[in-house]
Length: 191
Ligand SMILES: Cc1cc2nc3c(=O)[nH]c(=O)nc-3n(C[C@H](O)[C@H](O)[C@H](O)COP(=O)(O)O)c2cc1C
Image 1 (cartoon, rainbow, N blue to C red):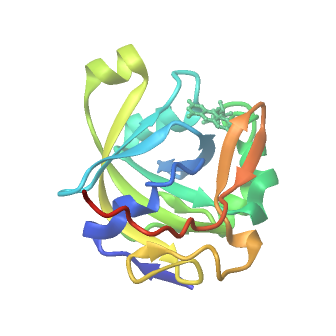
Image 2: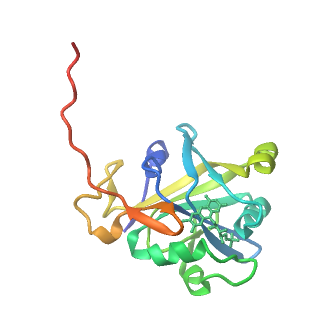
């Protein structure tokens, strides 16, 4: 079940470095792509960074609308994640059925793709130099959501959930690992 995540906790949704889906909408056209290169940037207000190549259609929609969603896909949608990272919305109406089923984010209107386990709705922070020189886009998170089967009480709980709900981590060439188990340790004492 999708639950709201307090903004002061939302950077935790990306702390573990998952592959994300970047989605956007402008003038009735919706699109989604995969991105391995994203990260949290600041706590208050919460900010994120993501690299969006100039060739991507998603980037064009974000430049036009000023809004986007970073969502964390689960193992259950690994094939879809690989596919939206392999074809461009410039050439095809990508996953029209998936995007049609995606609810518009209440804060941004950008699509919230189903099968993800977290969603960060973002307002683009225009930084034209970074965008042109490094393809680096910044966003302020204005709303955040997570599936409470795996994220509750302000943190992830992958160990006691179904494996299909684990996040995806891109290695190379369309190969993913799922997040592993929590490492429990006894803190070292000083001295
Ligand atoms: C696992 C994976 C990770 C990717 N990471 C990025 C990324 O961080 N930045 C980027 O610009 N493209 C990345 N891509 C490539 C885009 O997803 C790809 O170019 C996509 O077709 C763009 O779609 P669009 O033109 O419909 O926006 C990645 C692809 C895959 C499969």
